[in-house]
Image (cartoon, rainbow, N blue to C red; front, side):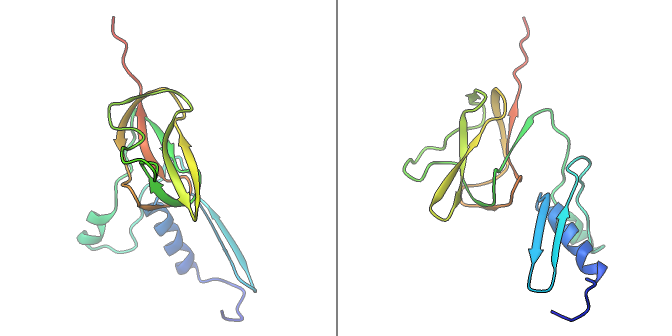
Length: 150
């Protein structure tokens, strides 16, 4: 690390763009000479491109509004849609879930953190695959509300 106490802004903006691309909302970086904390507002988060090529723009996932409730990771780790001792996933698209039901796990070392449904409904889109490395607060799946039409 250089002796200069100022971090170049292009590096900071690059970190912000990467955080947005990967759905991260908070990042802490520390070493012996400095500490940096970046927090992004989740409202209105949109992907940011640091390059102008069309290939780069095509690779950035779009963050479109949805009618469903987003189920987010409680921590950084490995997404586990099925418990390691079971072969079947905890939930499947279309399956009804209740508020507080375990819908997945996040593995950190040898610890499994349960991912709980924040509301009742049915499982919509699952946004991660088994074994994917995910960040804190990253979307895992959507819980959709059923339309009760009489």
